[in-house]
Amino acid sequence: MSRNEAFDIELINRIKAGDTLAFKDLVNAYKDVSLTLACSVLKDNDLAQDAVQTAFIKVYEKLNAFRQDSKFSTWLYRIVINTAYNLLKKQKNHQQIDVLSNLSVETDGKSETKALTEQEQKKFINLALNRIKADEALILRLFYLYEHTILEIREITGFSKSKIKVDLHRGRKNMELKLQKMLGNEIRQLL
View (cartoon, rainbow, N blue to C red):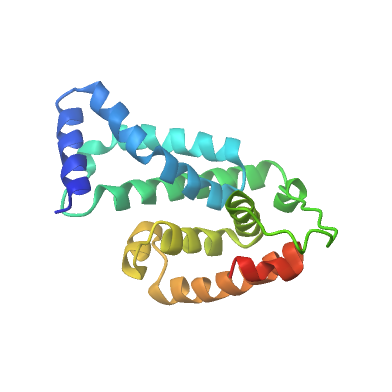
């Protein structure tokens, strides 16, 4: 059991014993990753924050159902992702969302000689992730950013092993195409 897993178990036991500050610590430990995962699905920061808040409420309400034979983070991320997909379905039923309309990047080709800063690189990577399919973006983030294995991603998402591998492949290709459109020759700095 890793240090993080032991810390999670300790927090969970404190929460079950009625320690509300322990839940705050648990939320603080996982809110950033949870928000990133929800943003991967929803492509909207405000909606993602709503999804994460709802997911943490579900976690609190169902904490007694958590079996400690698996990692807490896997269980939590599954709840966050499912909550985000449910919110996305509700949004699509109420209105048609054009995800790409809020994301436009103007490139005039004049900055090809200027190197991209690390902050700019992250910005373009996030823009590209927001322009590919939600499943592909989610799997790319879980695999590369959070360094989960394919088996862990399967547990978190419920996707089959083959779907994960296909989405990793397609996601990388689609990311490259999106980055090529946005950056032209500067893409070499990111790849």
